[in-house]
Length: 67
Image (cartoon, rainbow, N blue to C red; front, side, top):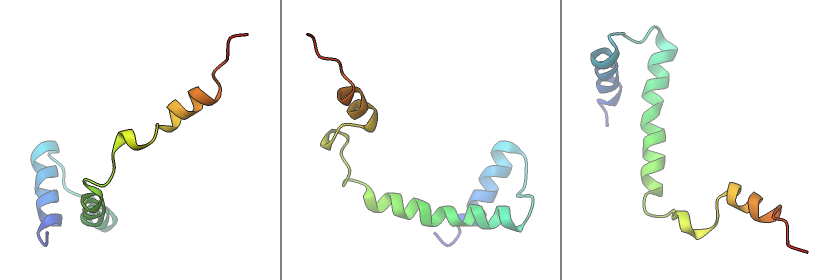
């Protein structure tokens, strides 16, 4: 992944026709390498069905029972 920043800049230029505007933009793009690696570590360890989503939990918690 050493060439990730260059590949990212090339993809942005190809798809959107722009170059990173400044050094902070280049650093943010380069930081994606760490984010992607962190998500790759989680691959296969998280299963949606392990626990209900927070929305589903909230629905169940506020569910009215029939009198």
